[in-house]
Length: 98
Image 1 (cartoon, helix red, strand yellow):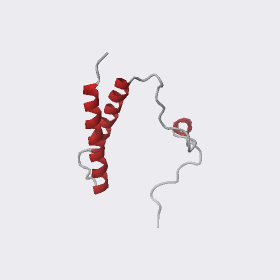
Image 2 (cartoon, one colour; image 1 turned 60 degrees about the vertical axis):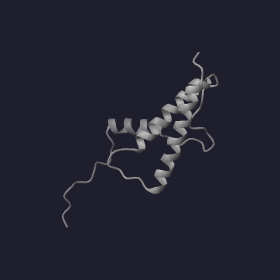
Image 3 (cartoon, one colour; image 1 turned 120 degrees about the vertical axis):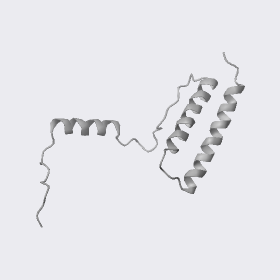
Image 4 (tube, rainbow, N blue to C red; image 1 turned 30 degrees about the vertical axis):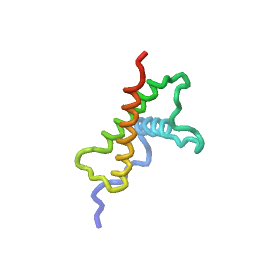
């Protein structure tokens, strides 16, 4: 059998080294007990609810990508996310603006 494509070179280009270094830096494995998301201690209730609403909105839009079918478990999770978004949106309506 004749191999059509040649083997890649044994060395990495400078760009490949920089790319690998950046990926290693930003995607490095964190400690198992380290939080992946840290909230500001000075975050107000209204700001926290608004931020949660934005995150839930993004989750809903991400899950409803056109052309991708969801299985039953994904639909159940999205139902919970949509319900949580409704609750947060209602809570935001109840908060008095400053």
